[in-house]
Length: 56
Image (cartoon, rainbow, N blue to C red; front, side, top):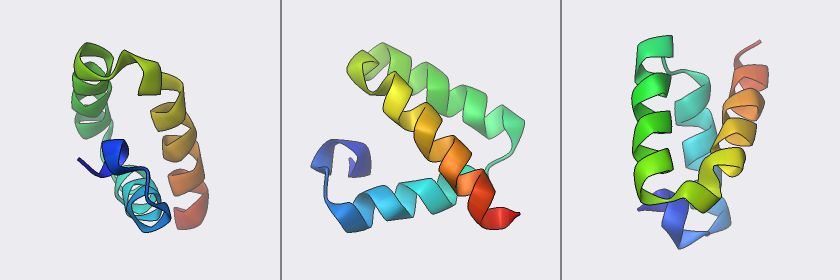
């Protein structure tokens, strides 16, 4: 729902959550996004990278 809302705070929340997710969790996220919101796959990958940068 946060991904679809497009609000800045929701995107920031997603970025932080994805940055701290385990590889297994990320695979589940990727699978769900690819299945239900395929246009957002690249956006989610970018959020993962940005989120990881926050944790470094």
